[in-house]
Every structure is written in C-alpha cells, then in structure tokens.
Length: 393
Ligand SMILES: Nc1ncnc2c1ncn2[C@@H]1O[C@H](COP(=O)(O)OP(=O)(O)OP(=O)(O)O)[C@@H](O)[C@H]1O
Ligand SMILES: [Mg+2]
Image 1 (cartoon, protein in one colour):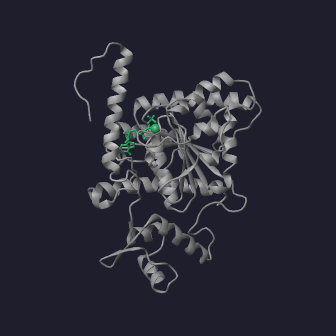
Image 2 (spheres, rainbow, N blue to C red):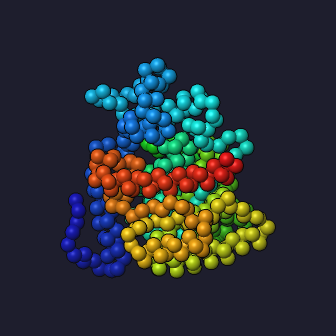
C-alpha cells in the first residue's frame, strides 16, 4: 500500500527513514507492474526483417537457409511470419560463421592473441548518461555477436537494474563487492550472473559496494594496490568474454580508479552543455592527477582509446551544437563520430529499465523509435570499430 500525506515523525532520522520506506514501496509497486506476472524480465522476439539486419544477411538468404535446412526454423511462426528469440539469433550466427569463408564475418569477437577489451564509461558529472550509454553498448555488442560482460561499479546499481536484477525486489545475491572486498573475497566467477539477453553476463552491484571506498581507505598501503583488484578479478574470467563494459559511479573515487586501471579503453560520456563542459574539464584534470599517482608506482597505463561520447545530443539546439563543435575541434577523433541523441524513446524505455533494443517499434511512434535506434546503432558501430582496430583489424 502506498502511503501518502504528511510525514510526522519525532526525529530527522525517523523522517528520512519514513521517506526511504515510502520510496521503496513506490518503487516495488512500479516494478511489480512492469514485470508482472512472474517478475522476470524477458527479451522480446525479433521479426525476420530485423533478424536479417542484425545478422547482416538478406531476408531472402534467411528464408533460403530455412528451406534448405542449413538454418533451423524459429519456434514462433505466426500468420506465416517468423519471429526469432535472442537465443535463436545467437545460434544462427554461429551456424553462419561455421559455414563462412570469411573468419569473423558473423562472430566478430576475439581471435587467438587478441586481448580482452575492457571499456570503462566514466565521468564524475552525475546524469551524463553513463548507465544509459553502457546498457546500449552492451546490448548493441551482444546483438552483434560479441560475448559481453557488464560490470556495475556503481553502488546505485542502475546497470544491474537494466540487466533485470531488481535490488529493490528480490535480488540479494553476491555482487562485484564480494569479488573486490579485502576480507575473504569471492572469485569473480561466483559473482557473475547470466542475463536474459543472450551474449550478455553481469557482475551486479548493490548499495554495499560503497563499502569498498571506506575499506580501501582503511587498507591503504597493505598488500596489493587497491587499483589492481578489479583487473586481477577480470584476469580470472578473461577467456569467457570478448568485451567488458564497466559503468562507474558519478565520482572519481577508489571504485572508478580500480575500473580505470583495469580498462584497456575509456569513454567519457558528456552532455553538451556549458556546465557539463566545465565539469568534464575538472574531471579530466583530476583523472590526469590520479593517473600520475598510479604511474608513479611504476605501472604504465596504456589505453587503446580515451575518447568522449556526446550524449543526450539535440541537433536542433544551437548552443549545445557549438559545444559539440568545440569538442570536435579540440579533440578530433577522440570524440566518437556518432552521438547518442536525446530522445523520448530512450527516456521512455529507461522508465521500464529497458534499452531501445528491448522495446518494439510498434510500441512507439515509429519515427521516434527509428531516430533513437539509428543513433544508438551508430554509436555502437563506432565503438565496435575501435574494438576491431585495437585487435589490429
Ligand atoms: N539519449 C537520451 N535521451 C533521453 N534521455 C536520456 C538519454 N540518455 C540518458 N537519458 C536520461 O538521462 C538521465 C540520466 O541518465 P543516466 O542514468 O544514464 O546517467 P548517469 O550518468 O548514469 O547518472 P549517474 O551519474 O547518476 O550514474 C536518465 O533519466 C536517462 O533516462
Ligand atoms: Mg549511472
């Protein structure tokens, strides 16, 4: 039952406790409605046209594959139209790759000798669309056939929520905190969960992750350096993935720094406004100081790319476009060519803890959906390009 009306409590502690309780009930109610009846998130089905596009083949090629038996028919065929599940797409991709003469055409991930790509999205400016950009990249890459591990380094757990684990509801399992903690840490493998999205696994987060900040301060100078902890944990699962995408909290604390050390590349999401520009300047300056401290311990940090990603871009807004132009003039190819456009389709999907890849075109104004989808695809494709470049392709 939602409680409304004035809060009358004796102390400020009781007032805030009541506020937290009311918010929790409201969130639980909202989530139960979204995930009813079994409270589990599922991935939608993909039409034949969309599936062909995702696989990079023609619709005709797909139909031929079904008729000559090289590709299995999907389970759902309604009114003669085929609908594919994420798992069926994943399977077809591997069948196509096995029969293809060009290596990596359908399964574009790591080959012998390619190093695991670890991309961290970070900016201490809150609300710069880090989590939104992270989940869209994860979904884009997984749909493109990469084996992706999402790592939630933010105690707020936004990425964890996007991946279908609701810390407000049932989820109370192990989190990335358990793999990073100083006292008897768990192997990362025991913390990782698979998601309902084929190709995407998650190292989840909950509020307790914020303990890492305090414990690191207490443990300073003892044992291995704090910033090596995530990198060490990732080493233990590195064979299972092509790409790791890390979401960070809006702070440049120990959590973000352990991510930065593990990262082979960094993306700085930034909304094109004057305030964000100023904040990003401070952020980069502080990052540089911290990188200096880490490098003074004798380690060399070598990122494949360290680039800006323009988020919530509104091409019709002139002042913001001046900032986009300024960023491009200052940093050229260190600004991702495509931008994530500001879109009600993305905002609406995120209300349901979904990416644009999870909602269907029919649920929204088509042109709104298409614009948002094209923009997220373009950003994903630019990043995939950088990943391939890091592998020398
Ligand atoms: N392309 C977009 N179009 C419209 N709204 C967006 C877009 N990207 C993000 N948003 C909205 O902006 C808000 C902030 O986004 P998000 O939570 O991803 O930022 P964040 O940087 O992860 O925040 P925090 O610093 O709290 O972790 C959210 O309400 C989100 O829905
Ligand atoms: Mg976030």
